[in-house]
Length: 305
Image 1 (cartoon, one colour):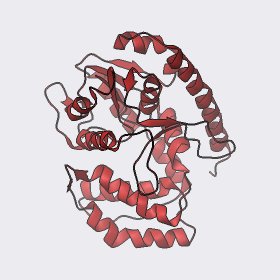
Image 2: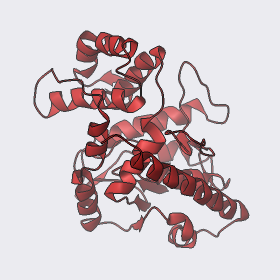
Image 3: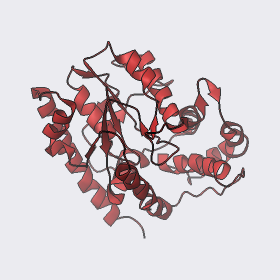
Image 4: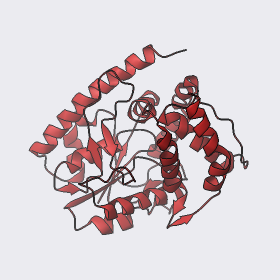
């Protein structure tokens, strides 16, 4: 049972996608894409989600629900003496008969304890630098353009991802968001102030921080580009990531952004042979990521100061 864990924006979903292109691994929870030319949003690995607009044909809804609950458990569960959070047992139990090598990964969330890790037999840590984490967030998520329905949809997704555990609402976030901020965001969208996914996502997290850290229900909506660049280049989360890696008490493998150049290291750690489809998928991802990295450089060079 293999866990691929990222504490910041990194390549855990990409490694999961790559492995699950081989039928020995699974279940497949992600889709791979060619980057779109001349756009700020260049998502190349995307989680498959069940929502009111989209029902993936190749994803079992029960598997999806078990995995989503594991991500909530990751964020809210307590650690044991080995700093492990047992967020994966239900997932691996459910998926053990679906493939030879079940794989778990997170595309959002991290443990409450910054040194915490998900429980697994084989643990792969996807490690990012500050710039790489910023690049993944900005190119893969930030500039998805919003429409009016997205404000409702993304807000519902946020509280269900982070504030719903075992079917129960575990905080005040939902109540306060819909009481104080939802209508304002809708108006800001109509006024042209709120345009992109990152602006709404930051607002969601701002309320969470206000409640959790400052014990207050108010915050100031801020949609500025400078804020995006500044916060995504803040080294605090990377420092926490590095402390987690340095203090790991269990067997693990750390892989950087160029994991596709050394796939044999990953496969040797797992104890599985390579395959034609894995070789092809790794080369495909490398080609796509190279394009995204260039588009990110172009975006930063042409961004407002």
